[in-house]
Image (cartoon, rainbow, N blue to C red; front, side, top):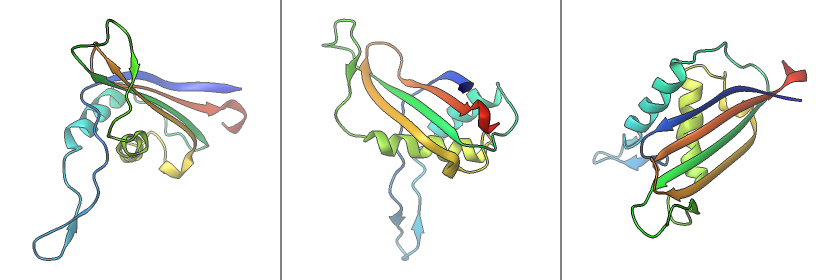
Length: 134
């Protein structure tokens, strides 16, 4: 049986994890394009602070991208870049950094999906655990 630990909506423009870049002097760095998105995630999770999850994690994330025209009130699959797997990476990294779980390797089952909407951009996220694993 599964137990929901977190279920919340993070408002903001979802950002994908960028690829490491090579600097002018040959050093590698990560562009800071996801910083504002990670901060929004942190703020939402820290307001609902719970003990760190130590067992296996099931992560469901639905990303919403605002589109003004052509939807007629519908939520439509988002089939252009960024890719769903690149959208989930900064989320998992952020959740590790703020102590939702110890390491993102605990995520054994993940379900990222993405849609166009006329509503707010953001992410609906649910974190579950198997009750017998607690």
